[in-house]
Amino acid sequence: MIRVGIVGCSGYTAIEAIRWLLRHPQAGIVAATSRQADGSCISQMHPELTERLSLEVEDLSPEQIAERCDIAFCCLPHAASAPIVAKILQAGKKVVDLSADYRLSSADLYEQWYGGTHPDPERLGTTPYGLPELFEEQISDATLVANPGCYPTSAILPLAPLLKAELIEAEPIVVDSKSGVSGAGRTPKMVNLYSEANESFIAYGVGTHRHQPEIIDILHRSTGAQVDLVFTPHLVPMDRGILSTIYVKVKGEQSANDLQTCLKDFYKTQPFVRIVDHLPATRNVTRTNFCDIAVRQHGGWMVLLSAIDNLTKGASGAAVQCMNVMYGFDQTLGLVDQ
Ligand SMILES: NC(=O)c1ccc[n+]([C@@H]2O[C@H](COP(=O)([O-])OP(=O)(O)OC[C@H]3O[C@@H](n4cnc5c(N)ncnc54)[C@H](OP(=O)(O)O)[C@@H]3O)[C@@H](O)[C@H]2O)c1
Image (cartoon, rainbow, N blue to C red; front, top):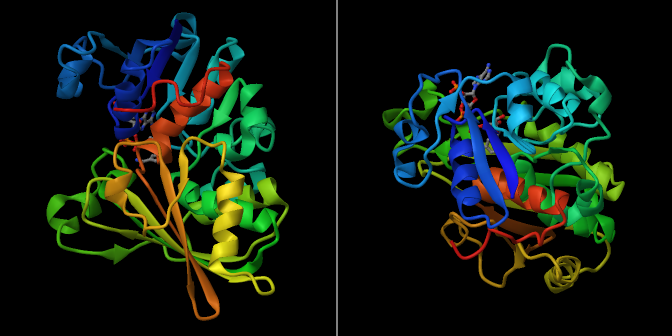
């Protein structure tokens, strides 16, 4: 049995990871950390865990986490995560980091978009990006995996095979994405208050969102293409889910059918990517690790549509999928039929 530690257990990605890990036949949760630890059981923090997980929340040091666990899921904000991750790795244990700290290829890029000096720059560029659909071999050998951002997952999965096959142009690409409110985490922020978000629909981070360089960087790493794209995220008044509508230009005379065939072929052995004929909807993937993708033609543009659950395929489901690959299990272990 693999001993798993959840670092930052009070948040949304943490409870999502716990939900999946509780039904994993080869993993057990042995530690859960929070700065809010007061000696109480984790079910005080997450009442849905009542009679499902009896574990005290503790404010453990990285060294203490490493002593107890084989692998840690670090569910912390960027910048807070890397120093803790580095110490757990130093103690010889594995980590799936759900923050953005290890996703980008260079410290320069990180500093440009996140500010500050990266505390562990040597690992940037060598840490595998946690999409097994594109980086399975690297993940299988890794002690640290950089779990992807939620919007990037919804954009990279439809775009990468088509760029790799040179069926679409690397520019222009327009990624128009909408997310439920849980995408911003459980830590309170005014824009996420019910009376601010409910019955409203707003764009944010226009031209400045940190997932834009992540999408460009990872598409380059996985396909060699240097894309130029416009990425605009929106907040939708729903709990969870991301729908991305992506506008691309084809090379030559490709039809929507050609693009769909390429995607079907690329993902034919991948259990969590479904190339669908219907239009993807967040409700079809809610609380699952699936990414649904469809293709449509509109005049001179091709429209790629993808739907994921931001907390599952966009975060903690992907983290469990990566853990499965790191330990040589089937990718789907513990992740289907919930
Ligand atoms: N939400 C999503 O859909 C999503 C998707 C993909 C990736 N992510 C990424 O996953 C990470 C966690 O996101 P989340 O949505 O779970 O956030 P969250 O709900 O706000 O939870 C964040 C957790 O981090 C802890 N924390 C906050 N500041 C900290 C600090 N300075 N030092 C140590 N611990 C700190 C908090 O714990 P205590 O206050 O209890 O100590 C809390 O448990 C983030 O990096 C986020 O960008 C989120």
